Image (cartoon, rainbow, N blue to C red; front, side, top):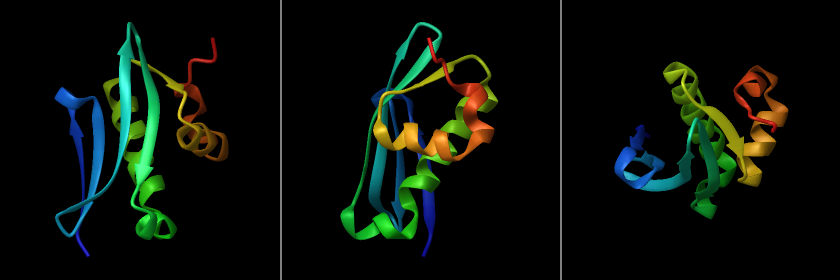
Amino acid sequence: MSTEIRHEHSQNRYTISLDDQVAGFADYRIEGERIVFVRTEVDPKKRKAGVAGELVRHALDDVRVSGSLAVVPRCSFVAHFIDTHPDYQELVDRG
């Protein structure tokens, strides 16, 4: 199974595809110096395969590399992911 994760800047979205079929996405919006993750959705048939976690990890790593935005996890999945992966805590804007 091939996996591809894309950052679709024009749609404010990260997508994950499995074998060329979109399996999920994470939507965000930019608010000044913050990236606000508002929604993550994954095909129910793919949820137990760790697809959502892989997608969010990639998105947060991308934010980390850019180094210019603080993360606001309004999406419950992104918030839970960060809470259970302390190495992403420094990205979060708690204010």
